[in-house]
Image (cartoon, rainbow, N blue to C red; front, top):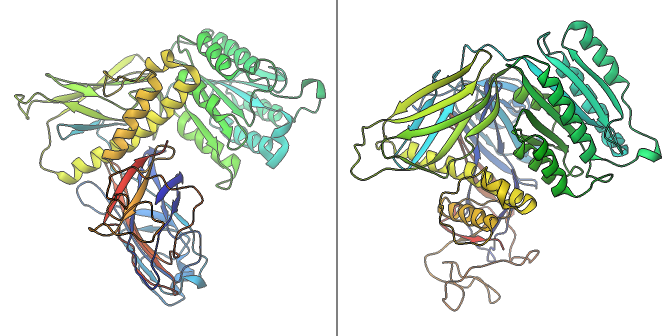
Length: 583
């Protein structure tokens, strides 16, 4: 039984008979995306327990089978000094590899091996008009323009200074990230900073241009920001803070030139606890005030404390992006700096839209097709399904037309392709990539629909099946996500889990078994199976072999890892599986 807890944590329960052997292969797929000119990836290496042996193979190839150089964070000096079979180049913890890595570590307990290996590579360049692929049923379009002059930016930072921000140095880290980001401003940019707590505005700086003198003054202002210690304004008035900031940002935008991009960035760790606390009303009031989409709202929340559902809904409805600031990964300041630099660094385009066209072409269930901003080194990716009439000439072109505002004017880019029926690997990657991207989109939209109601979400999402019979739109969203997860064999958090089986014949593993190994119940009936949370399984999983695949259109990594313990050695290979829905 396999269930996903988060991006790289999976609970895996295996029943092993005494002195028996069980084979399982767990395939982990991760969508990769270019940010700041490179693609980052993470590969789970060992489970949450010590193991005796690790075999690790990793390569990065483009879609033509050419090997690409890549970097990984792994201490090779430590491994090379011990009894490790290795075929690698490099001798540092951040090493560039021009060929596959092959490691066979027979004394894994003697090394401080990471549970997750992090790496990165530079993908091949995307053609200036974009890259479009279709196999006649699935399509992918990648777009990353070059030779575009950056647009001036009008930034409005809304920073939470309520009492909870003093814990874990959250406020100090946010201040450090803002000071780092200010260095990227040019005299064409402008900046405003507003702090809030139990009332909408505590302190205010700006609006000022991004000159050296004003940037120096802004840094002094930020350095003096403190957590509010006045009990009369304790709490967090997100409602008042957002509305006041939005009104100011809109006014500042009206005073600037037409090609300026207006961006509001909220950084908070709290729920609305003062003033208006109805989350749906807060989100709706912000949306109503910003219906023209003139201000793009981006939200950053400290995971575990911030109301990420509300922050995500506000960003979703106002042309922005939300992101959690994670505990236990990089320090908070680095995460905030990376987000601001990648999403809002050198902005090349705003209000980017993509349209797939062609004679008698029907586009269904496309992923996000409107992007509020596009920063340098970042890519626009849209995936979806298409329908073609049987009589249509397979060589007739299908086009992707991208439209966006630039510093000078509205510009169009057009790329065309024909149906590719000769590459089953590409076709499979296209569908799996689409499934992951679409499921993530649908799950997010379902949460927004349950939170905000159907009307707003309907304007933001096109379902693949426009004839859904469910009464609630959120149920239609879930139905599409569930159907796609089952077809693509995707285990998605809160949506599906997986039961593994290891024989073609129906056999009870023990008298208490609730499911036979061929997916039927012990009496032979086909029924859905929901394991009881917390129930124990016979035997202990002692080792595993896991194969991980990560893919995008311009380069992909392929990694396999074999891990084992001495108590009972076996190799895990999954022979079949049964996906079921989580209620």
